[in-house]
Length: 246
Ligand code: NDP
View 1 (cartoon, rainbow, N blue to C red):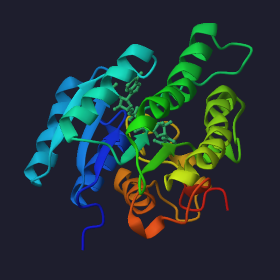
View 2: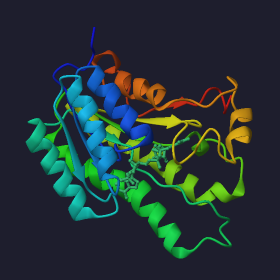
View 3: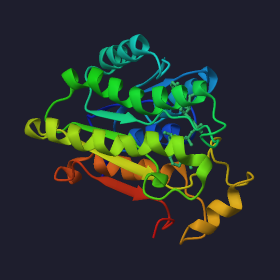
View 4: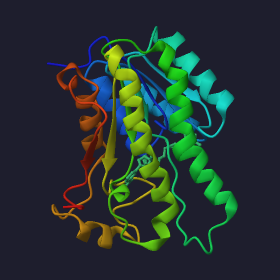
């Protein structure tokens, strides 16, 4: 049986990659879904069409996760189009790899804006709409627990920051019966981290299972944590990395 019938979900960065897969998985479980995107309008529209083909409500909203006004407007629009909000998935994220010595200040700022400030501001905008049974799921990274390369340091700083934010959020929302959790993907085959790209083999070798994961494998973890089956799970982190950090 479907686990999210009647729920209304907003997935940031849902035009491609993990976010698109999360949006489709939540819809397959019965949810109505809004996605945001920054640049990929055609791909966002294609995700919406796929979800509508499942018989669910779907809407794509252009909103830069680095822009406070755009974030607020996107949450308001999602609530208006879906008729409420039960599930927020903070997925939109970027990667910039360089050692600290060589990383441009602009890249440091962009990482902090999109990966940390974005989820915080989006969660703040969503709070007034969430009610008992609601959930906030934030997409971190398995690198938050172990950093195999120096060029990942700033990116990982943004992802480990989410752990503390999530713990405080769980404390704040617990009395209302709303949960807050992190899902930390391992290497998932997307534009950001292609399984056949230059980092494919070393990333695969880190895993216990000997392969990249799929966006749908992250989507199923998010669907579980946002379902009524997971109401006692909050303030914690679920790492879905094929055993890479084992
Ligand atoms: P992709 O680069 O493949 O896709 C990123 C998605 O986020 C796109 O839909 C993109 O929209 C959107 N996005 C990026 N910047 C913004 C912005 N400023 N405002 C709004 N939307 C934005 O990444 P992945 O799917 O691989 O990654 C998704 C999340 O998972 C990220 O938080 C990433 O850090 C995390 N992650 C990924 C791993 C992996 O191996 N792939 C491993 C661990 C964590 P648009 O198409 O419009 O640009």
